[in-house]
Image (cartoon, rainbow, N blue to C red; front, side):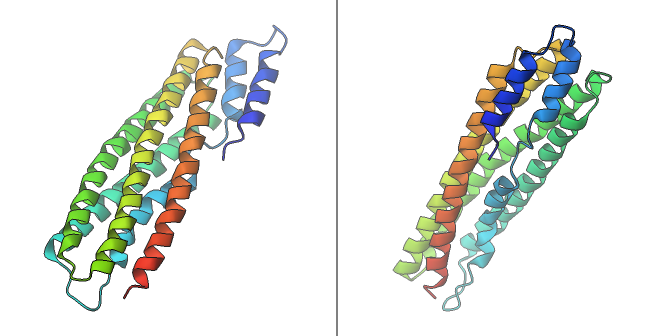
Length: 225
């Protein structure tokens, strides 16, 4: 989790620097103090939707609709992981970029990160639709217990994707604040940036808890065969 208290303390220290410090140098220092924002756990939580490949009922053939929904969800999930990874890299580049000397490059990275994040947001909606189709196809399984356990697992995963959608929205708020800070060469956006970072952390915590719950559901599902 991002250490917000440490981050806020470091920002307050920067705000109390002597007047001789320029806004540009303070902004540059501030950017380098921002921790790596997008946790790898977020990627792991989203990729677990590939649990669909762990549905190997040996006692009956897989329903056609289930197989189709499984494959479609897996493809979209993979794309979300790729987009999230690219966004992470862009944010890391912004942190180490020479903002004072090349603000244009930093702004370009922010724009690209926002575009990738927006695409991940759209794909998360698409993934939720595929998961809903997957849930509907579970009715074709003959075992009631298998259906119930699978429904429970998919329901948790839908909640996880919903939380990820909120996560992308909060990350976009952060990137908007960062963009304004770079454009204006000022720390006036400190409050907005800290608030959005706090929200991103809360989303990450919820996603991690949902992921643990999901894995527990999957263990029960696997043991049903």
